[in-house]
Image (cartoon, rainbow, N blue to C red; front, top):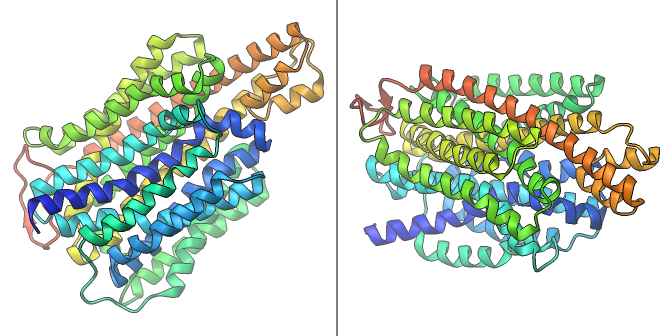
Length: 509
């Protein structure tokens, strides 16, 4: 494949990654408009945001295995139209339940796209140095897409209704189908094993049950959540046992014994956990606490996106002179400092603190997440590139889903607990306002001036308190990731050809 066609193929593969990650965060800026139109409860709103990432996390391993067997390009061409149609359904949803169903279909469509993109990179860029740069572009698209979601959403909401944040996906999917058919090579396992339906059922059921338990247990710890977690863990344990004994496993568990693989996946999980968790709050802080319009909110979030892109594209060049472990650890430390800076948003800090936190978090995310993806691809055999990619992306999506679910639920629980006894506000209105910050501001608009101002101020302070708690949790998670990266991302790497290569001190993991 000529260099021009290789890099053109990369541009094609970046499109679905960018849109999928944008869809993970674009609703943040649309929450107030969506809440006013469809009036979802707090639980429905979190599920509308979460279900997309949950299904992505639950289905990626299955879809990665299907791509290895039946062709990654073919799977991409099937998933793109499905993703486009689901986007149209989401855009024109008229009830919370309809939007929830559309978001679930988006997750299903996205799961067919993601493993194909990273898996195809291994085929298109066999040389390590070119692949590092290609993976950096891929990671920049993923991380920056999560940051660009609110930017794009703010610009669209300034002129259109909230459904426009989904409708923009449809024409891009049309372009993707045409370009993929012309530019992408087919790539598959040359000796595919029979499809293992029981394993597929076990991994989907186990992941979804565990995610559901963690999500509901944070806000309402009860017997149902505990039972779901126990059953989900048991199902996943059964899946692991089956993979160890099966002659043709869906997931090659030996991948986790390869140097750097497990550490790289765990670092990605924790990094995206914090980033997506904060992206649930930052747009609402700008829109409702600071009172900015959607477009201005988008512009204020742009530095975070730009810093993420800069960090992602810079990382492979830095890794040529500095060990990968140091690059990743530096990124994680920048993330931790950025989250500590974000705790000041709960103390009435101004836009300077917001900008500092955004730049630190964006640059840190770009540095921390890019090279770990190259470690995943490098340690996996070429025939298992799709499955290895699916494991990495499952970590991404699982971390993102849990960031929104756990941190979203935690922050909103703090918000609800702090919003009490506002003078002049009826108890029923106060209870309704405790569901979401958008609901509180909408209710305040219909109250007498004094009571309305009191509710707006109290709800904004309560929401900012939730951000402070979430930011401290994110900082602690990044310090845990530092320990994992330092212990796991050093020494020698097993490359995809199963030959052990000693990596020069400044060249890589």
